[in-house]
Image (cartoon, rainbow, N blue to C red; front, side):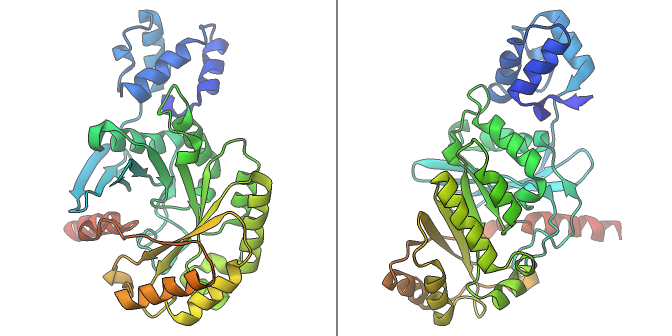
Length: 349
């Protein structure tokens, strides 16, 4: 048996046709699952009873459990999901003026070992299925203000391009008018610099947003922060981004987490300016680091942040200073999962 959420609309239509059933029922099933939040095929009252019985025999609707819910004073809300195999993943609701963003995970843990990120502290377990990704979106929508999400970002635990097929399938379903109907340009995929993934995304006929975790302007610093830089160094990464912009005409967002004593000095700002000078269609999000005491990660003080941003402005770079959200609830990727799994291990011990 397979989770019904693992099928795109076109795939589900094909499955129904292959079983001698009218394909138009696929749209009804999508509406029940994604718009009405049905958790049982027997709830789908406008489907013929024999079809509902057949669906229940051949498929299931995956559901997970909300193990923990934390709400920040800034409105950010983190949900910790417990999957059927007892692994944990995280999703975050980020309300802002004119938008409500759902941040979802793509993997259980992470194998890329970025030194500033808590996602990989408990190790990598496995990829999420498309259905498990979409289950996060359903829950986040339910918990969001007015039960509404306007944007989705694949910026939670895991590297989306390391689970490319399931992430792309989930993105297409999120975009479908018969599911969540969230515009492709309101769906963002964030990568730590997996060049083949950027190249594949450039060939997709779907106008998703691309965010690249840059976080350093020198290869030595970036390799220390992000081991993937040893495989895809800055020159190769930026070349892939230039090709992506040329092929798609789409903007690339560079994420730059400012970490005290690591990548936030004037020298870093000057080299970042030099590196990105002349690049078309981009913006830089400067984000003061969330404090993660387990990793000895702390944000710079405010004057240093402003000096860094000022240097970029002087060189004409498009840089935006973003606030770290949910600091009082440990909203950074992987923090809550790591804490809960440690608590579980300690209780067993």
